[in-house]
Figure 1 (tube, rainbow, N blue to C red):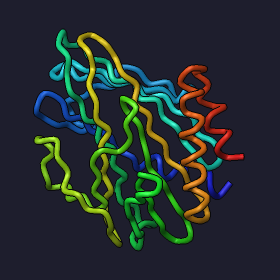
Figure 2: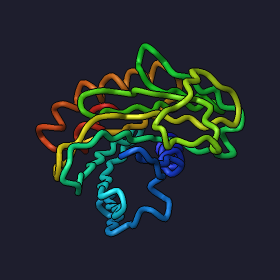
Figure 3: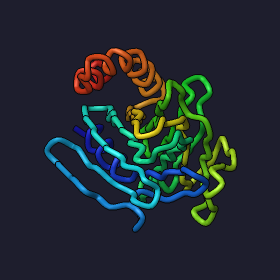
Figure 4: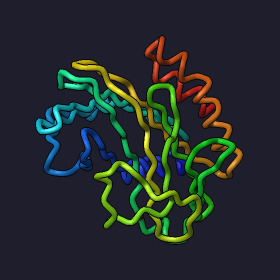
Amino acid sequence: MKQKCCLNQAINTVKYGVWIDGHFSWVDSENWICIDKNEEKHRQIFKNNTDKLSIIFESNVDVRTILQNITLVNLSKKKRTIKLFISQQITYEMNDAVTFFAPSAEAIVRSYKGQYLLLNGLLNKRGIIQYCTDYNVNDSLNDGQLKIHPFSYGTSIPVFSLEGTIEATDEVNAYFWLCTGRNENEIINDNLLLQLNLQNWIYSNDIEKTVQSCSN
């Protein structure tokens, strides 16, 4: 129960941003409108009329893992390059957090007060492209570039990007997952199991089965 509580607290601090056509905006900014929200189904839909883009978030939470299916819908009649930035904001409990990019898992790992978190994702069959473990909120992301920073301590904000292309009037699926555990090995193993099962989920559309297989 403690781990699931930790997981719920962690996912509530996750923030999403989009770079497309040469400019950037956070999904919680005034540029985006929430046009549908179903808490029972863990589903939200946001639309940006200026960027001609919609995003559908669908998630499933288990004891130690949350997996989000993020559908990016191109409302434009041209092929576009897109970068999805995912950040975890600061909380009081994370004042003494150690945050680093783990090359073996190709993921962001955080350790604080006996808890471990892992953040990872996938878009166009590629994982994390850019990462920064100590993002400065005053830095602009309008150029779509992060300052690489592999390790930080204390009140830091990690950000990473998933990058790909969307055909005209088409959509692509991105996947974001967050694992919690009591030690680094536990979250690394859950990350690996989720990746192995993710392709099966993509074809079966059974997100619940995928996350449960990682938490047993």
